[in-house]
Length: 57
Image 1 (tube, one colour):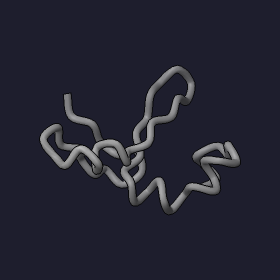
Image 2 (image 1 turned 30 degrees about the vertical axis):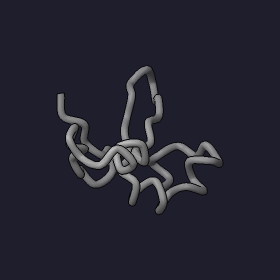
Image 3 (image 1 turned 90 degrees about the vertical axis):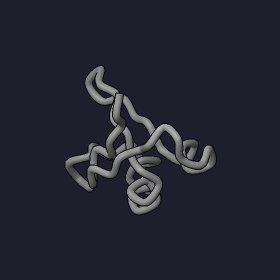
Image 4 (image 1 turned 45 degrees about the horizontal axis):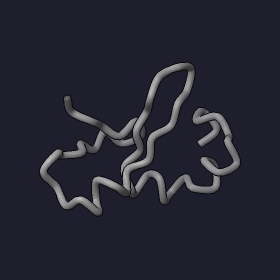
């Protein structure tokens, strides 16, 4: 199964550096699990921590 960033579409490869795999962020929204790549997570960390709905980002 391929994991993609919900914001930019970046692909998380299974064989990449373990520290890069751990930098991906998961979130649950409406029962679905969405993933954010490290760059998108950094760009939106305040929105994520403030629990703003993703349509506000």
